[in-house]
Image (tube, one colour):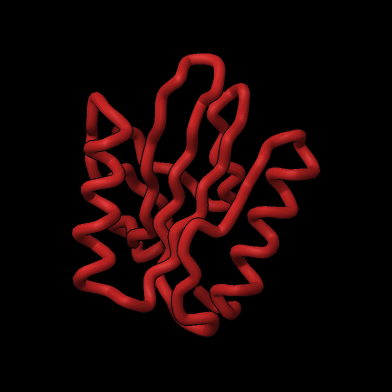
Length: 110
């Protein structure tokens, strides 16, 4: 990211809240350069998804779903595994009636 992680996270939370969603930092990582896992929860469908930042073939940043899981517990297990490897990791959770991520960069199709 070109801006500090804490600034980017604050912007994401602000976008979500302005659209009527709820967003929180579930785990605070390195404020300057920590990676981010975004967990979204669709409150109508009662389903969750995870997103992590990656690079596309053209080198441009994009977001991918690192795991396709049937249950939220499986997603949480993935997050826990990542936290063991990267103590600077941020985890941001968004709850929205439409399951929106509020990401400003492209999301790759699963």
